[in-house]
Image (cartoon, rainbow, N blue to C red; front, top):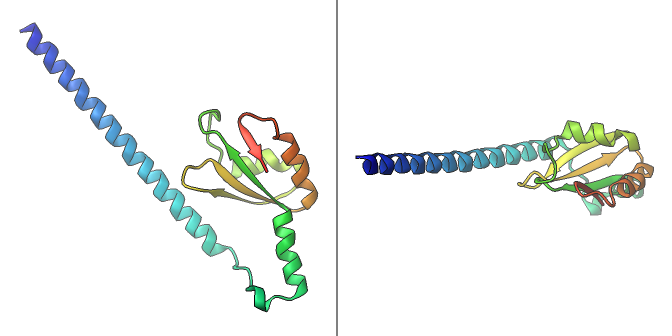
Length: 138
């Protein structure tokens, strides 16, 4: 009778573990789906850059200027205690200069593209996180 009870408990534990894994997978899928939707919304809200054939010299310089003002961030999800949000990244990087935009990249949620108001803000940001284990900037 004790053996039967022990087998029953083991089976119940296995069912709980299987259900937990199923819920984890479902949660991951929901987070990925939400991240994809948010990224699509951000892309739709951003003005599309003009085509190269129709650009004037000033417009081409503006496009280059945006790239000069951007920093790509990447972090280890295991080492970061809390996964950063767009808002928390903007607050963290404000010490280097005015942050215009933060866009989370990828499905994993461990990268972002930060646009500063000034290109001079990029180099100090990259230098500050050059040796960091948690967050890298390039």
